[in-house]
Length: 105
Image (cartoon, rainbow, N blue to C red; front, top):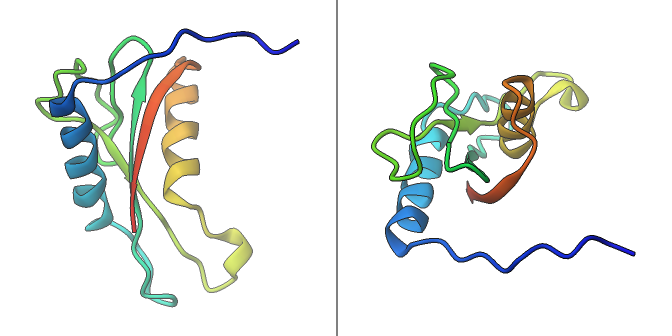
């Protein structure tokens, strides 16, 4: 039987900040072949969000969340999507429980 997780709601200002951060991450996308930039911002259970350029962490009140973007390669299977990049970075930093992700395309 699957574990039951308590219903969680995010404050509207944090949802808005996640959306803004995913839009900001989209600006860093490397997509010279598809011209389809994507950005993602990932919120952990303990209220932290990740960013591609620094790898630093900030509280969920989101003064400067950390976002991820997609990275393309001429060989399409070697490209990395924004959401996968965000999740991999969070896991590499020891975070495995997530509350929300915002994706801008």
